[in-house]
Each structure stands twice: as structure tokens, then as C-alpha cells.
Amino acid sequence: MGISFYAPVIEDYGVVYGIFCMFVGDHLSGVQHVIMVLSGKGGVGKSTVATQIALGLRHEGKRVGLLDVDLCGPSIPRMFNLDHQDIHQCPEGWLPVYVDKDQKLAIMSISFLLENQNDAIVWRGPKKTAMIKQFLSDVVWKDLDYLVIDTPPGTSDEHISVVENLKSYNPDGAILVTTPQAVAVGDVRREITFCKKTHVPVIGIIENMSGFVCPNCSECTNVFSKGGGEALAKEFHVPFLGHIPLDPKLTQCLDEGKNFMEHYDKSPTLHAIEKVINTLVRIDRDLP
Amino acid sequence: MADVPENAPTRKGYFDNFAFNNHCPGTQSQDAGKVSACQGCPNQNICASSKPTGPDPAVQEISQRLSNVKHKVIVLSGKGGVGKSTFTAHLAHGLASNSEKQIGVLDVDICGPSLPRILGVEGEQVHQSGSGWSPVYVDDNLSLMSVGFLLSSPSDAVIWRGPKKNGLIKQFLRDVDWGDLDYLVIDTPPGTSDEHLSIAQYLKEAQIDGAVIITTPQEVALLDVRKEINFCQKVGLPIIGVVENMSGFVCPKCKTESQIFPPTTGGGKKMSEDMKVPFLGSLPLDPLIGKCCDEGKSFLSEVPDSPATKAYISIIKKIENHCSQTLAARETDTGETTS
Picture 1 (tube, each protein chain N blue to C red):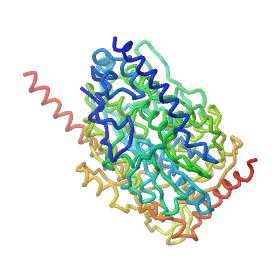
Picture 2: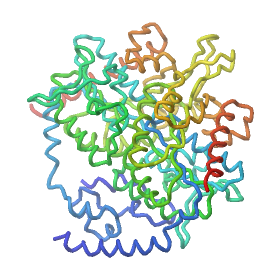
Picture 3: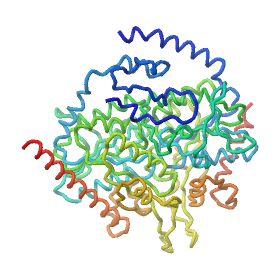
Picture 4: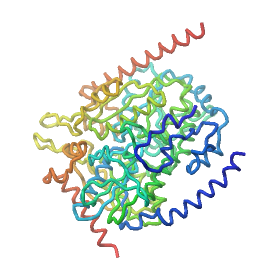
């Protein structure tokens, strides 16, 4: 009874929404490159890598957008010290939060929509999927050179939704982040299968937290072993983008929302990140 | 009981989004999908059509199946990669060091099952018998069930949306033949979503002893862990306490301790105080722990005299104590109601 009554309403909504999308919801067509940061494993540094890539690309003079689709654990706003920013709405859609005055780096995250930072987003899949759809269709990115998408760990709702909704925009591909130990590499192996099955090109693999140099005696310890990511890249014939060593200063900068690149320009960790960014900028040139 | 209004975060500022609609009646409501607030919500169709009639019969079946399990402990964290599975495995090893006790481990991380490797039983098969799925035995008194055993190759990805994951979790809880267990330790994926809601929902009648929440010291991790504590409070899951993992690294050469993940905002201890939950202790970062996990060995028996082992044992003791206290409380409770 209830269904037959409501069915026409849903159909109407669908049509209206479709027309709406044709005129308004197509904010991604002005985006040159879409890069996803993925990992099957949590806590390997996806958000850290996404943040550093966004900052690095901006440093190269690009216009960058950073979308955080980790709905249950958004970390990006904290890493830019934007905890208490608000999202505003304009007739075209949602305006992202800009990190800088000249609006070269725009950020969108669910955290901006929460009243209280400790609020948990206790949502099942369909609600997450709809939210991601809205993030991808309603955010007014304007003209971007790069849109970097940071994802939660796994191969589930969020990932399927992002890939499905981006299909018509030909995303450049995914950067996979891993840590060196076998337990993490095992999960990232599954993520490669995910990319293959969903036809997302793998730009390359980054091995994060690879080695820690003791600040006292300069002895390098492989806290989470070493070489796992590199071996994985070889096994699946995908490019290896480099080792990023552990640096407590990086964690500290991210906790405090400071720009690591400006504060510690001699760190070997920074060199490793720069190498990755050079690869990404090269993608730009390689394209017709 | 309407589940969404309690859980729905309040909306901030002015923007249009159905998900923050504070008038959502909740998926369990009689009016789900039918009130004016539902119009325009993508879930309306699902809510209006697939109305469950009465409680899910599985909840009863699950509490029946798990009635021979004395203690159920859930390991949670909002953040990924903080060591949930590592802690789960070592909690299980620690509890199983008493050969009188029977321990079961359930891995509900469907997309990233790591426990088969950490417990050294990768590549094993699950067998089916008349009484259900038999878990894989790591030791005489330690068994494990994981989606990892159901995959044909280690590179297989489980690309599933929520409902399918929930279906498998239900099966894990209902159909695994654990036998008599003293402890069932449940390892979860990061977040506060399908898997967590399902576990809390399905085990509602089966009496969970509590959740152990794992964190690392840096603020970016604590940010997500606070959300997880918030989740526990919302769904009524008791919290046994917080464990801070990876706190402090001792250089093997010069023995200087460094903070690889600096506790810029006071770390897990301060957070526990702020959130008014017990703090169970800190575990140092020892490269050998990761190595043992990769090789599927128990760090506790491989390196029995390390400071990390001692820290582990003291935390496991606290969890055991908590569990025996809740059991005693439960027995007096039921004693009072029956007499």
C-alpha cells in the first residue's frame, strides 16, 4: 500500500534530479586529473600521502582539490588545521574550504558538516554511498588541475561508489599506499585486485613508514620491516613510486596542521615525497 | 526503537543534505520511508519496501549459538592500522596460555582479513559439518574464523557493499560451531559502519562483556578513536578500556627512546581521562612484534622477557579481571530476578 503510493514520488524525484544534474551537478568536467589514494590497509598513511601530494602539487603551481571520502574517520581537515571551518552553499552547490587566500587548494570533508568533532557517523552503506555521490556531484570545485581523493581502508561501499561515479570522467588512476610488513602488503594485494576488476589504472605503489632513523645515533631501524611494497609492485608489474621513511616530525606537523614542506625542507622523508610528486606532474605532460 | 535519530549527527550551518535530516524516523520505525522527511532520500525505496516484520530471528539464533561462550570481547578502533588485529591475536595467545581455557577468535574485517596470517594459519580451509562451520584450530585451545579462509587466493578482493557483509557476519555468528568457549574475541575493521552496527545489533541479546579500544598516540588517530567511543556509548556497548599501541620506540642500538607517533595532545591516557573511560595501558613499538605477526608466531612466547610482553600481560590480566567481574555481576543479576 505504502509502496504504490510512494512509487510515483520516487520516479518524479529521479527525473527532477537527473535534469538537475545536467545543469548543475557536473562540477567535475572542469577537473583535468583525478587521482585516488587507496589502500586495503588502514593507518598506512593514505591521508598523509594525500595531504602531501596536494601540497606538493600546489607548490608546483597547480590548482588542487582534495576530497576526503573517509566518512567514519575524516582526518584531512585536522591535517590542514581547518577543524572548525564551515561549508557554505551557493546556487551552484557546496563551496569547498580553501586552505590559502589565492584559492589554489580546496578541501571538502564530512568533518566540516559536523557540529561536534567527536560525533560518530554511524551510517550503513546506502547512506554513505549517497553522501559520496553528493560530494562528487554538488561540490563547486571550479577549474582544477588535480582532484585528489582520499579514501577509507577497504574495498567496500565507499570505493565502489567513488569508482562508479567517476567512470565517465576517466580518472587518471589510483596511488596505492602500503607499509612494508607482510600483513599490510596482504591487504594492498587485494586492493590491486579491486583496481583490476573495476578498471582503475594503478599509477603506482608507495611504501610508507619504511625505516626509522634514530635521532640520537642515526641508526636506521626497519620498524615495520622493509621492501614489501617494492616487491609487491614488481610482482604485479605496476610502477613503484618510492619508500617514504618514518619521520616523527611529519606526524607532529600533521597533528598541528602545519606544512611539513615549509618547516623541514631537508628531511629525507620530504625528498621521497617530492619524487612521487614529480611522477604525478609527469603524467600531466604524457597525456595528449 | 528508532535507530537513526539517536545516531544521526546534528547538522551544522546551512546546506542541503538528506543524510543530516534530523527528522529521519529511523530504519526500524513503522513510518520508515513514509513520512514527509523521507521524500528525496535515496534510501526511501529501501526503507519503504523492505520493512522487517518484528525482530530479526537471527538475533535469537545467535544468542542460542553463543550461549556456551562465557565471555565476548570486541576489539575496536575508529582508526585503521593501529594494531587491532595484532592486539586481538596476542590477547588470544595470552588467554590461551592457560591450557584450561578455550579461546575463539572471530575476524569480521571482511575486506582486509589479517588474522589468518598473524595467527599463522593462512591457506587453511573451513570445513562444514552438520552442526555448522568448524573454525580453524591454531592450537588445541585456540580457534579462528575469518573470511580469509573462504577465499581461493590471497589476492582475492572481497568487493562487497554493506548488506552482503552483514549477511556474512550474521552467518559467522550464527553458523560457526565453536563448541564451549571461555572467550570469544572479535576483531573488527576500522570505522563505525555496517560491520560494527551489525555486531552490536546481532549480539544485543548475547551479552557482550565489552569493547577494548585500540589507539596510537598521535592526535590524528585519537580524533577517530573518540568517534568510536562515541559510537559505543550510542549503541550501548560497554567499554573495558583503551589501549595505546605503538607508544615509544627504543632504538635497538643506542637504547634511546623516541616517539615515532608523538602524543601531541597527551596521547591515549589523556583522551581516556577526557572521555571518562578506563585506560588499560601502553604498548611500546617493537619491530619484533611486527615480524612475529608477519611470520604468524606469538610474540609473547617468542620474546617472553621483553618490556612489550610484560605490558601485554598486564593489559590481558586487566581484561580477564573485568570479564570475571561482569560474569559475577551477571550471575547475581539473574539470581535476583529468578528468585
